[in-house]
Length: 453
Image (spheres, one colour):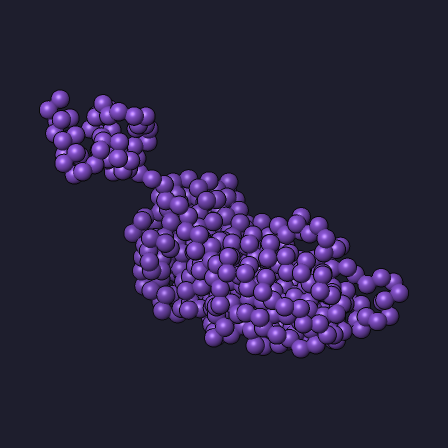
């Protein structure tokens, strides 16, 4: 009991009564860990001394929804004061659910009426609380619904470095139209696409039959959006009872792989797969390798102006399966990957790298996309891999190396780009490739973003 009395005496000497002292979390930890349970009062030692869980950084925002978004709201006489306020409420709910933050989505607001007005830029507010207050303060302007004029102004003036736009982040305009626009919106849509802006149209309260004669272009939605595929258009029947429409719209705005009009990692990369077809792989494991390749390729927006995919199979020899220019649709690329025939033979990875750099990347060397090489192998190469990999790095190709089973770790590191720990992967079993595919996709997007800084 001597230790107990010394501790209690020390507390009293400091001018603290024992009940006061035990209010301190630090003292509770000391007392509980030391076994001092004789203090009066209802003291609980449950969880004392345990490390507290870190709370998420709310200021960072939703890191899985990085986008620079302009809300282009309708401030015309079409909507009127009452529905204008309902529109602001809906936009506020969308902004709140997005998870605005320094490392998440950034938003700004433009009002369309007779003349467009930028109410606030991306850089002005980085918290949901501030954005909601700014939206609340926006006043109704009135005038004609010159949505085309406002969209063109937004694409040209809103998205600039000075306004807070971030490199490598999708640029998005969400256009709210109550009824129909008074001017031509097709040209504005073309301008927006040229500036790499993804245009979403949220239409509310379509014109009634007797009003259709006043609509300049009945098909204005299809002509304004980024792509006429249904993804970029969204209809709300009325401004009343809109809560259930918030989440589906937010999900669209956070689906970055669909943002085809912005330069992103999903549509601005060339990815060549170098696939080990040696005898040690075997037919069944080779199929798992092709599934791995497909799982990566299917995530990207493949087109003649978007992401491009190529594949080379190697043993001692190299067999180009398809080049970057052979197939320009995702469906065709995935189909040809499924039909790749297993070669079987030895393993000369170094020669295969040199072949791919020269014959696959050579013809598109001066293109706008960032180049990636993904190597999948299961064993020791019979030739040197260090010099060919260094030549690939020098040519501006980012290399990911994935080893399975007997692949030497030193070879994987020699082939991979820096930093090695994020570009070289190893798994004992071919079934482990499934998880690595996710890591490769994230890595490609990370590398792409860093290249845009």
